[in-house]
Amino acid sequence: QVQLVESGGGLVQAGGSLRLSCAASGRAFSTYGMGWFRRAPGKEREFVARISSTGGTTDYADLVKGRFTISRDNDKNTVYLQMNSLKPEDSAVYYCAGTRSVAGVRSVAATRPSWYDYWGQGTQVSVSS
Image (cartoon, rainbow, N blue to C red; front, top):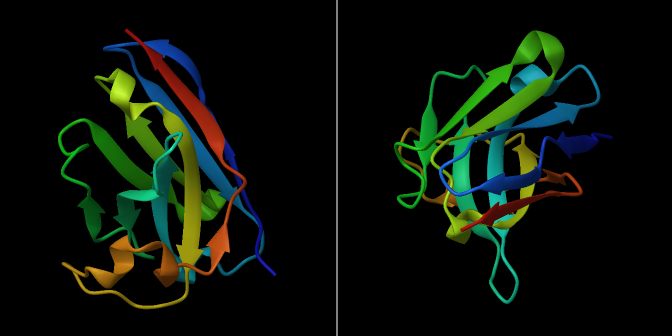
């Protein structure tokens, strides 16, 4: 049984920054690959970023490369998403997710929601123009 709880969302002006956190229950966090996804109104859930269990591999959607950074602290059972230079089109509910599956460096499968076993409830990010 794994629970994920996101926090850190809120309102920010375009060009601003937010840092999202995702706290995981249990003591197996260090074995999970973690990802961030987002869903905007009227849109399907889309991949944002992922990080391997050790933190040695990261991957980003093209839309956020150079602006967002995913990281993790396994001692705190927490994964982070630092979001800089935010744009109105970044507005969405952001979800963290975890998986026991092993993915390669350039895994396409690990960018799909079906790869993940555990999901948080989401946190709202709203970026004003």
